[in-house]
Length: 271
Image 1 (tube, rainbow, N blue to C red):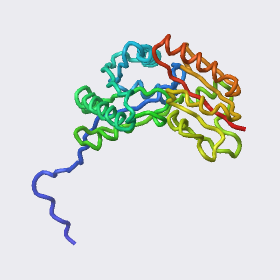
Image 2: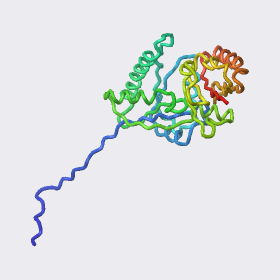
Image 3: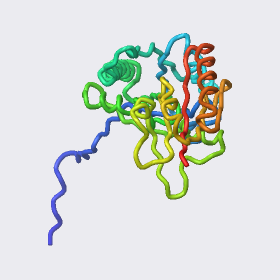
């Protein structure tokens, strides 16, 4: 059989071109101790061209300082950029909790969208440093998803887990989160104030601005409480709730007056 005739003219190879997009790391940085960072978190820090940091005002300036300390301690190349802005205020006086939170998240989404679109090159990598673990009571992942759904800016993102305040609290108290074959629930102070969760004896409480544990002094409960866990201001109290509740209230009030804010978490254990 005769061989096929060679093609006439130059051969054109069609190669699919791939366009790189912006990359965002959401990095869990632990509960406050720079040593809480995992090796994965350190690697992610060193891949970022820019870090997005929200300023929460003078009262919480030590939270911003801790982020700077983490960058100074773990990044090898100091040529990264810092993009900082004031965190939108949330209305904490209104009784309409959900609408207030929705409005605050929307304004944060506007800010993050502008960060990514205007401050990050199309092939660059940016990072958000999230206290504790990004998957536990933090808004960053939900806000980034909202930005993607808007469609104005595209990016890929990766989540780096961190040591949560819950993990740090229990480690400092040298106790476990759950007991053998028994469930545990993580909830908020707002929910605990509505009543004890059904079917559980171990309840971790976060975001409790009104000390909801005081509503359960008539129950036989043990509390493991901590504020500013992992920082130089750390305060720890444990004992029967009915016996140490007053002490926790005093310490909490003193700490809040001294620093202007408080970040605390606790485990209530029944039986």
